[in-house]
Image (cartoon, rainbow, N blue to C red; front, side):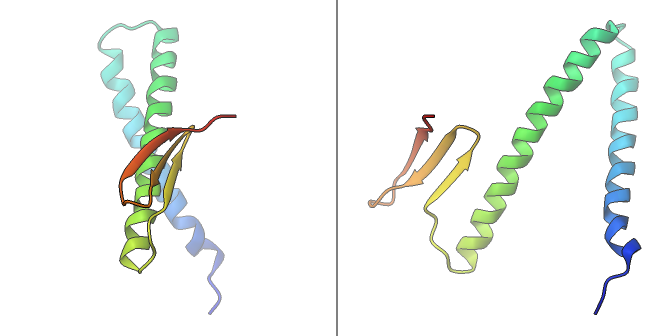
Length: 99
């Protein structure tokens, strides 16, 4: 069965609309505080970066949960420059990845 082109774009359009609504109301709340525009832009960049990191972590944890449910064994999780490893004893260890 072949998917129609518009069927694959509908979720993306819905996400864009939802994010635009959230951004509109967030901006409206920030404008009450009379914050200079450059500081607002800095806050947007900071909060966007933090939320992206949390989204990546949540996404990867979803892979772990579904992998364990389907019978795979958890070995490691890498996020940014950190790795969470499961050693031979079954204990979790956190290591910093060295370049």
